Image (cartoon, rainbow, N blue to C red; front, top):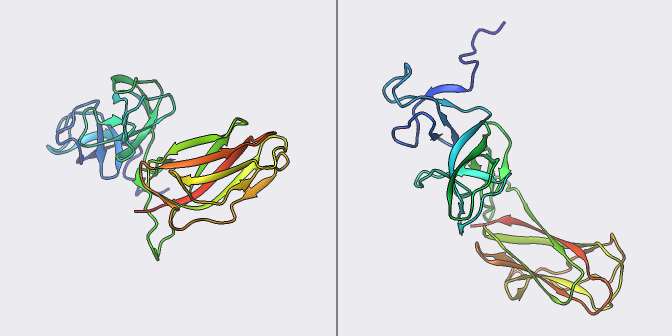
Length: 257
């Protein structure tokens, strides 16, 4: 039987990166990992600079603010929660922070409330808002020697009159491919969808006068417009001349600096 296992628990005595002097019950950060303090710093038999921290799975009552990186934003059940050193409280929807867990209750936009949060442990494969196991996914640079992870936006287009469906992107994204899957009957010889960077076309207009379940792929991508800035608008313009224009548009990209 192996005798070199040091701990059989997810509670460890560690020096916390933030806050400077944790108190029992505080969310804390240790490097790129997050947890909840079980003791005050230096208490419970710890060295003066150490705190007992629970890094395991658990549900905690913690203070969370209804904000994200764009401003006030309500917290819904199931939202990813992040730890931000400079904020009070530390927990919110700001994906610029370190992944912490999943909200199990709601918080109004701009408000602060104590809610149940499901804490997830180091090693849990969590991809949310550009975070993998608490580590930010890298941007894809020119001639990068380590491959990047693509991002996919799914945009449902209703059978409605000519108009735009806008999605404001959190991260700067370079569009690689666009395709549409028809979700309604054919009809309307001039029915199209087109991906745009704000008002500027990225793709050609995709002909969606096709049968249900047919896939239509963009034939061109404008390399002068294919990078959408953080906070920029990915716009899908639906042009309907008649018949059914319902489809789902998929936009594949990579994050860039």
